Image (cartoon, rainbow, N blue to C red; front, side, top):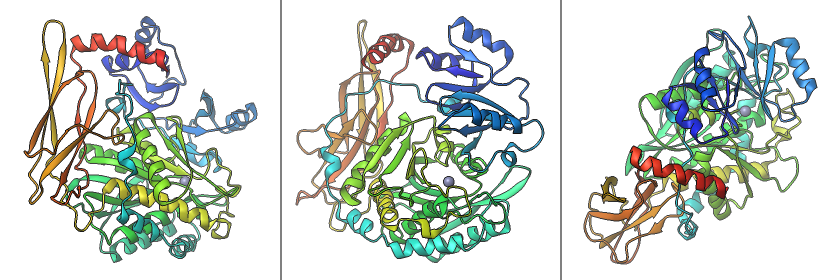
Length: 536
Ligand SMILES: [Zn+2]
């Protein structure tokens, strides 16, 4: 079923009826529904259409078709069933065979999950107007050093080595060998490294490679940089060099591991090479679902997929995010401006789930996809001609620098001579209601940091952006109450410690004061939603 997003009540109705949403797109949701539930949508005047019936065990592929011409549909309908869902999106399936093997390799695809993403859907919410960007403009010498260590020779070595496996088509032993090569490299760097095995398609087996650099201050808070090391082509499984797609992203992940493993960070950094992306994102799906089951605290995911081909110079780097991850794209822009001198093009597009960021979106984690062009302009895409000689190493080095600078900015390198980053930072909200109004008080607390003179608290309405200091003079205790806030708004806080010389530490982890959602406040919220709609 396709359910239109034309009204804010849609989210609430999906929730109250526990409808199994399996994909979010810009204009609609795709859901698996019992026939009887359609009447609920009708009763609430929500537009929907039926995409397929009797769906039981069928495997569906979401397919990207930037020019959704009738000829494309006609060609796909010779192979199986194809139904347009949105402007650039169609649904493809077959009656008997694996739809993946029938769909020509030139189409970007995502295997639709059968698990509901309903619990992780972000309802559009009210936010404070953005503050100034001053804080983000602080230059960090360690991040600059990290960006400058990115080496084109090193990137070339990684891409050439991956290409030399001849094929990395996920069902082949060569792909396995490429995975072993990446594993060995991470281990050689001294990182804690492991395989994650998973099955896909007709009982094939493949492995993700996961390496970790454990954070010093908040080891449970994780920043991820990832790419897929499997590849495909018009002559797959025999030959699939996949230099741009996605040896380039994998090389950037390996380069990130090489450079960052020499530094200590506040938060843990994970370097991940996924497999079976080309079959429909199976490796990243296996990882993201397990991460959610363990309730891993993932701050953000930087997924790099095709970052080395320039159809024209200067080439910019496209950063694709969903609305909940928009802050990540802003942080890439800021890092890139400060440390990589590369132009970033932000694209907010839930309708682009065709790479390894998407399973993270489905599990409620912020994630971005860094890609040279959307839609793609690389003429060698998914062909045997996607080889290292077609890459532009000036652009590739810059895009890798932008990725590494963002990764370092999010995971926060410790700086010699600066106060320790405050640990144990938490926020607790309390609502105080009278007959006519409610307010929210937020109590912040933290562990004391040795040999500092005080602390600063920063607040924002937009997670991870526009932090604004809210204390007038340095705080000397280990708690602070932020009073008289609006219950229906979300607030985000970070804390710093300041020493006698005036040096200020890195930010603590971000603590969130949740929006209050009791029925009394949510009634008021309804009118706010209307307001927000009009402002758009
Ligand atoms: Zn790719």
